[in-house]
Image (tube, rainbow, N blue to C red; front, side, top):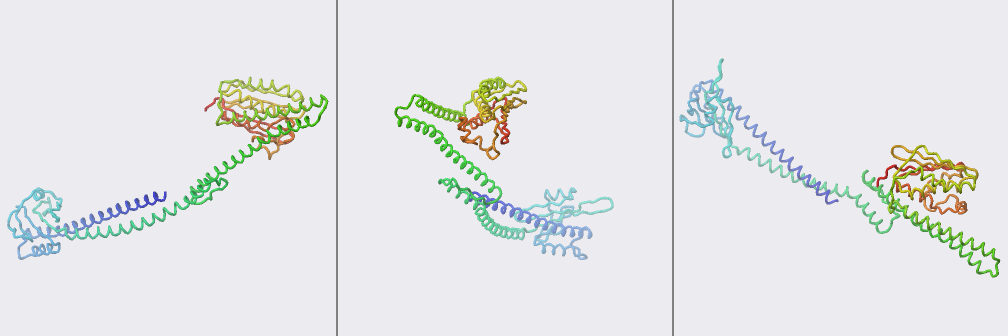
Length: 465
C-alpha cells in the first residue's frame, strides 16, 4: 500500500508539473510572439501613415520618411519593403531591388482591398504585410503594401532559455513532490502497519487481544469494527466453552445419581422389595432426565439457523395452537391453571410446522411450569398484512430484570433448584429462539418478578429463504 500511494502521488506530481510547466511555457511564447507582432505592426502602421502623408514620395529630400524606414529596419533587425499600387518597389532596406516590380498572391490580395494584415513564418523569419491605406471623406483605398521581414532568432533564443528554466524548475518541483510523496506514503501507512502488526499478533493465537485505535477517522472506524468482531468471537468462544462445560455437567449429573443409587443397591443385601422398587424408580427417573437432555440437545442442533432444513408448508396457525393447547391442557388442570386462547382472525402462514410447534409448546409449557396454582395463561393470535403475532402471557413467578437478557442462552436457569424440580433442562427457550430465527422472525419478552411474564413472537406470513 505504501508503494502504491508513493507511486500514485509521484506520478501525479510529474503529470501536474509537466502539463502546468508546458502550459506556462506555451502561454509565455504566445504572448511574446503577440507582443512582437503588435510592436512591428504599430511601427509599420506609423510608417505607412507617413508614406501616405508625403504622397509616396519616400526618396524626396524634403522629408525624412526614407531615413525613418531605415532606422526602423535597423531597430527591428530586419528588412522593410514598400510597394505602391503599381507593384513597384519604392523602398527596400536590404537589397538593391528598389525601382523594380514585385508581385505575390498575398500582395495581390491586399491590393484588391483586404484591410487585414498577413503574417507568415518562412525559415525562422516573420513576414508581416500591411496595407497602406489612403483615407478621404468618401472611402478608404489601398494604395500600397509595406512588408516587414523580422528575424525570429531573438524570440527563439528567449524561448530556449524559458524552456531550460522550465525544465530546471520542473526537475526541482518533481524532486520536492517525490520527497513529499514519500513522507505522505510513510505517514498514511504508518497506522496501517500498526494495525497489521496487531492482526498478525492476534492471528498467532492471541485472540483475547484488541487492536489499538489509531489513525484517522476511517481507520479508527475500521479498527472498531475489527474489535467488535474480535469481541463477538471471544464471546462466542466463551459461550462455546461454557456450553461444553454445561453439557458435560448436565449429562454427568444424572449419571452420578444413577451410580450412587446403583452402589447403594449393591452395598445393601437383603433389602425389602419396596426399597428396591423405590431405588429403581429413581434410576428410571434419572434415565428419563438424561434422555430429555439428549433430546433437547438434538433439537437444538437441528434448530441451528445455519444447519436447519425447513419443511415449509402453508399451515393454519389457529389449528396449530389449538392442537398444542389441547395437548397441554391436562398439565394445566392438575394445578387448576386456566388457559384462555384468543384468536382475532384466521391466520395461514408458510412455516415449518414441526419446529414452530416445538417453539410454541415450550413457551406454553414454561408458562404452566413456572405459574402459580390457580393462575391463568392467555395465548393470543393476530396478524397484519406481513406478519402474524403469537403472545403468551402468564400470572407466574416472573423473571428478574437482570436475568432477562440471558434466559435465551443454553442451559441458563433463573432458579436452578426450581428448574430441576420442574424437570427443566435449560434448553427450551434456546430452542424456541432458534426456531423463530430460522423463520426470519423475532421474539421478545416482558416480565415483572412476582407478577408474570409475556413472550411475543413475530413471524413473517410468507417465508423467504
